[in-house]
Length: 303
Ligand code: NAP
Image 1 (cartoon, protein in one colour):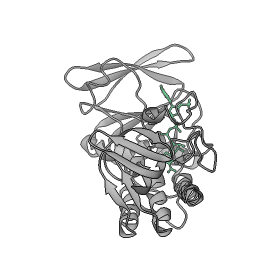
Image 2 (image 1 turned 180 degrees about the horizontal axis):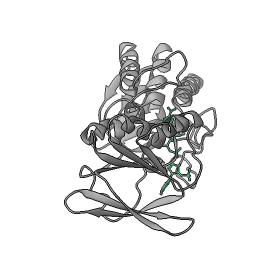
Image 3 (image 1 turned 45 degrees about the vertical axis):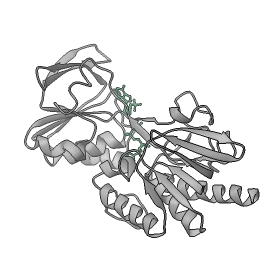
């Protein structure tokens, strides 16, 4: 029996582990893939206090080492559900069931897809959801990025250093992402921004060769020949496995406030998978601290 099981080893989950271990609570962190969560895809973090520049990969590694050195146990299995037995929480994975006094769900989110025909088949054959992972394959080639949030802007900027030409296709005429990044992008001679437009068709043989782009103001259709398409149209929270115990909103985010309490006492939510106004690295780590502190308080009251 652990004091706290944390589901998800992203910035929120690993920060929760640090806070819980510093309070001498036993902690197990369950991770389905690799530590770090979505931040490992960010090439250069410039907005985390006291870190002027750090790659998402290095940031994750530092955080992982910090949690591990404090004694957090990491197990690489995917949590598929949570059950309660009185006050005991049981976290179920494909292989095992683990017990804890409190659980923190810090599962983050997964890539949203465009929903176009052939999109799944073309992943790795011209379609990618991670510019820093796959950008290198497109050196001196033509690529497009879809989206208007920070991820799309940062991906386009990153790719502008590698590719010969980068199209940024956004469905509106203003960006959701930071104006400073958008301004940097507009200064790049090899970047063309295609506003008010959606990708409406993928044109491919074995690999993607072109995309059809439709202007949603005048209805005009344009074909752009390219080698790679980077989809950065947001993320979907990964909470469905826990929906029987925690209330979700219509978009699938856990209904938990700043104190990270969910609808089940002893189960907390931290990070991008919770309802919140600002999803940033700094708010994810803040959530981790808050969720761990509240979990510790909950356990102490039970003892
Ligand atoms: P996001 O902020 O939700 O932006 C998604 C973008 O995709 C929006 O511009 C949206 O258009 C567009 N979009 C959504 N569905 C679409 C569809 N079906 N077809 C075409 N376009 C579609 O997602 P994100 O950029 O991945 O960022 C997620 C969170 O992480 C944000 O809070 C972001 O600020 C944060 N983030 C922070 C950093 C950083 O701090 N350095 C880096 C990356 C991400 P509309 O604008 O029209 O809705």
